[in-house]
Amino acid sequence: MIKRIAVLVSGGGTNLQALIDAQGRGALGGGQIVAVISSKEGAYALQRAKNAGIDGYVLPRKGFDSNRAMTVALVEMLHNLQIDLVVLAGCMIIFTEELVSAYPNAVINVHPALIPSFCGAGYYGLRVHEEALRYGVKLSGATVHFVSEECDGGPIISQRSVRVMENDTPETLQKRIMEEAEWKLLPEAVSLFCQDRLTVSGRTVIIKE
Image (tube, rainbow, N blue to C red):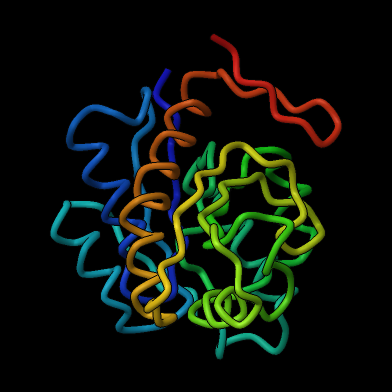
């Protein structure tokens, strides 16, 4: 049975494009992106969805008085769309526990660092890479994880390291991590979910062969 996927976005949608490309190759393991939901009007990710023939929706954060109110509205929308898997791909909203309660171990996020480093509230976008360079790490990377009530604290599905170069800027490091890690890990994790190959035991995600 095809698993219906909703991808949540806020900006340009490069990770969304990686998922769309994987879907075009038949590499989402029986999953199908049926909705792209943006927290901002005019996000370029919505154009990417349109180009791929995927329905786009706007659920603007500014239209709600709290993250909780937005989360409740989002869950209702997801249920109406009969969504099986929610993917956060550059979505800048920290949703409240109603989303996790409605979709336990069925919300996946990609984070541009090796969790538990450089993660949690406030660590998003270029700030993650600024902090990694400030700390002087030799390796950074990306993490794909299930979403829990703790920001960036859910069980880890997969990680990939990326070397930090001496002349890196936050922008060059961000680009390399996207190209070498995020755009590969996220479609792979979605495919594993859609093949029913992921089992969560405590904090550990077990990948079935």
